[in-house]
Length: 393
Image: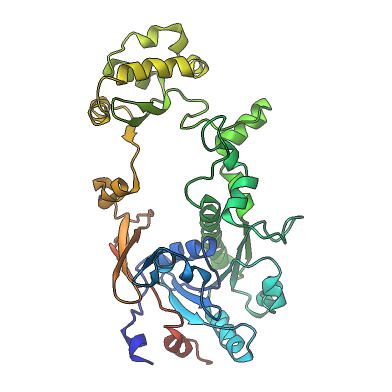
């Protein structure tokens, strides 16, 4: 074992998935997001990278020549570089599979089968192995062989048609919600499959599509379409069926206010100096407020115009009104609530520099939420230890 390997931490994060080994063939975002969550929950994640490494190692932004993008998704994993067309590397890969609990891949459907590692072949050889596949359109259906990126999933899944301001061009959600949603659903599938295996002793295949994930999170929009037959469109910050529930302009900028019932609306009106508004027939109940949303917004912004947003947030907060600022990211990461919840963590980069990144939102009473994560692996850095740990019996 090399000096570099001996200095690498061998323990995973303390978590409920301690003792679970994940072979991670994924790259870029959807799959690595899934396996990052598994790692944060205590699984040992062995990242099997193709020759040259995960493409996202070459995506910016860079810190001292290292991809911060890659680091934010692959902290705490181990890296080994394998060419699955090489007989020597295939033999090592199969030793990993023989001892692993889960294999995760995000290739186009059919790729693993062409390599000899499709679900049927692996299940026959390794019946306890859980096989998780995340792809653009899934392993069935007429689109299964199409390539897809997040933008395509957002567009085809309908979420882009709901995002942005009315009358404006289509808008992508500001993060890669197509990839991330698919990654999270894959994580849920894996944990459910681990539970099922405890009862049956058998692994299963998990097939998650980015398009499916986007349809699954359409919630209110899909319910409204099925109930009314009307096709929803973008509404800016508004909620389609709760009013007031959007961004409002104060003297120096915008705040968001969400008064989700009549009692909250009455308290809101009292707080902004318009106690008569709940008696106005146009605003007497939520259905009337929603039908007269533009008139109500004009009244609210007239009341809010006289004071800056910080003052209004203080007043509304004291009155128990759900409200908040529209934070830019510099303010998000400086927010004391975000800090208190350990939602910004650090991990040592490959060259030793600390890198800050998002934490794990899953808080568990049995495990401390550490402010640091095991460091980001260099390509193939953990080969010696992995070869030793997965030597033939």
